[in-house]
Length: 370
Image (cartoon, rainbow, N blue to C red; front, side):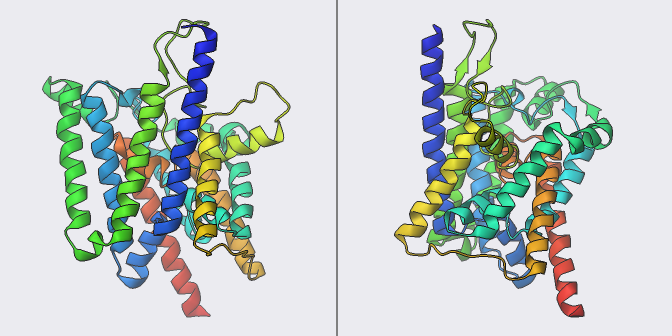
């Protein structure tokens, strides 16, 4: 493969990922898909509709990704989620921080981008602060603290930390067979739970859950299959084109927001190139804006008070720091990571949910005191 062919293929990856992110933004805006909202509905109102929507998305993502593993198209170990080193404390602490922060900031990274597309200026501020905090935790001051503290607590496994790899090592079966088994079992269980009650079968729930889950799977295919080059003509090494991690990626919205700010600020630096994370960040905003304008729900919204501003700023910082420490957000770990059946993703998701519940309980206590 010549250099020109590699660049042409990278462009295909970027355009495909961008188009899929537009779909994600449009579906999320139309169906009000939101993980924080799902947790809030359960805690505050006992309404499980959006939680079933999220479970449906997770089930579709798990089934789709593990079907590709079973077919030999992708490998979980070639993503950032399934390495043998399990930094469980980073996942737990980062997840707690992210979950608490997303409640203060009125939504996770993906919901914030969707709200930007709908005209919410509060969310625009959150995006900028989240991106700055995330970049500091990737390469700056808080990165040093992260590496010196929570990242040091880890367990090194003999194989990848995804369940199919662990089951394959324990049973002697092939990883593909275990992907069919584990992915099929968990994915179908999630789908069954999501659809068993009438509220899980409403139009918005099915469209949001199935649509978001399908986008996650499709971007895994774009990055891990379409964008995979077994031998780059310059390095002669395996490469996944147009990704920041140099591994296959699907949607995530913490580090990619940081990379988007970096690209915008240093645009004249020719070493700063578009990546899958950057174009998907832009695509979500565009897709959301298109639906908001078409349905006449687009409206400008600003901060209501000093306390409102402070809550959003603190929440943005917690999401930026926590999302990087946890290796992802409610989409990055909650759907993309969880679809790989990574142990770290299960820990991170549990931390995110626990952090969100704590924040919601704290907000209720504040209201009671007032």
